[in-house]
Image (cartoon, rainbow, N blue to C red; front, top):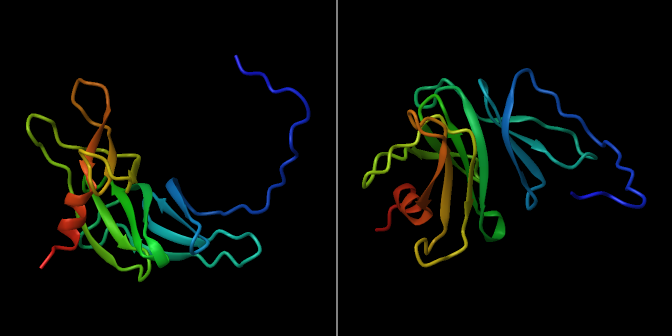
Length: 173
């Protein structure tokens, strides 16, 4: 058991951000000083993270458009040098994932994680994350998705080669 001893720091609340419905996932972007968050039945938002700047809420992608059905859930960030990179979001309404360019804020496309070699497809994802750390199995990094619907089995996590996703979004000539 862990017990805190001594004086604890006094923390001060600097800002409260209010939205009209449920926020599921969020990720901070230190380079741009932004916070990206998924408002379940509204869309993917960007807001200034610095409490001394105006909030400046900006809806980047709305739900229930031609391609993306509510509800939006997990959010993660793939950072690249000089502010390049991508924002990934899980979309339960499509059992899919969307990708937004970090710099231009343009929607780049989406993908699903289907059945492969006896491993079931991913459905009902809440949380996602990724790492660009190179390893033997995942030379360009790894994308991780929580799989919320596994029939009679417990939920689990699926690991996907990030390089496959990046090749799909940006095919090489």
